Length: 561
Image (cartoon, rainbow, N blue to C red):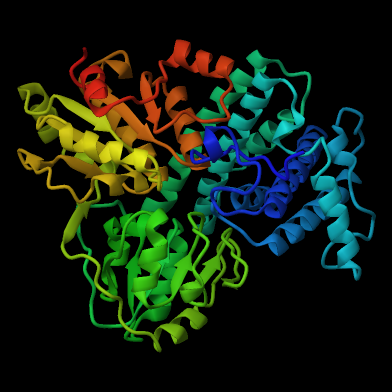
């Protein structure tokens, strides 16, 4: 038996699954603990679902726990085994207390019944070694983990739904940090998790649940968009410096804008500059952050280049969410985590949704560090979320009607370290001059510094923001459909060539499918967790396809050949 199995990300080993050690850097021990956390979280979701049927109210802390558990298991989010032991124990404790209130438990799965003893909960058990052993034994049990589902197609759909829910959890976590929550979304997430344990559901049932997950994905991204824009203002066209200053700095990466806001407030007047990295770049587009003069620019590129870029930054780095690459010893002491992120040996800044965090350790360390080493110079332009693009709607529509713009090319999604991803740089360079790229997510780093120019003042690369801002791209498409009086969104001059990496991309894909978008090209490879039959369903009903060569794909997508 292999020590682990994981195929949730695009870089999974040999395109089939990591079985010895995770390509992302997670160990077999960590992999099985994450499997066990998902297992007990699904069991808790079964209990909350039954409790709601019996008319009981589920505390917000329980919904937060489920969201946080899923978020922690997203690729590259948390590598700290100790945290997973704690989360498993917290989840078992929560499940046990809620289970005691139920009248009917006969339809719940065997997963609900498991607990390593009434007093065997981390934090209140003196014999932690015995508890760890109980957790490890259960994690290695045949009913835990991806391969516990024998039917390949059922397994594929269960995993697709689960990964979509993991992506949903990220967006709900960020929205909750700003005080925006939706009980209906929490309820759906828990019901859907419970259904992935239901052996009575057919392939057809799970296909329907997959599309419903996409619908709720749209709702969650709309909620986060509302949270971000009502808190920080609508993103606006912004020029961002990619050079460095002379002051010491703190580099913030990940996605959580609430963490950034608190860091900026706490560094005011300290002589420390704050820089964004990777998916934090779009923070510069929000008006509320522009009032901080020490919020000076973006440093570096996408997440996978952090080993070189964190080294040369010289100052502290704050990882607010996923996208951690296991750090080199040379800068590990300068890397801090918070929220769902974690790495052994890196200081974790505590604080839950909506609470004040204390970033003093980063600030004091920054004062002792040299200024960042310059790795590039220049500026990049972004801020083309839906409100800003709609403000330019007349100009955009006229450019389309006149033929100045013939195609919009959605190139959103994720970047990654595989050389095959250079395809996206080459594709962007080869696009005709009458095409405009719509992008969101860190995929943009493959082409956002290319000198592609503009069309009548409209930049040929329109960056809407983070991966969750793919919602903006959907809103833009729907508004253009309305403006042109089209019955079908697929009649627009828009093509989709999307790069994916992890589970937030999964919920974006499901959301696009729910909205009726067809003929999406997904690369650099199709997900390993899609069985041949499930892939065929996506191809036949939605026109999902892979990528080939730049030349062939240009002919198919742009030239219509």
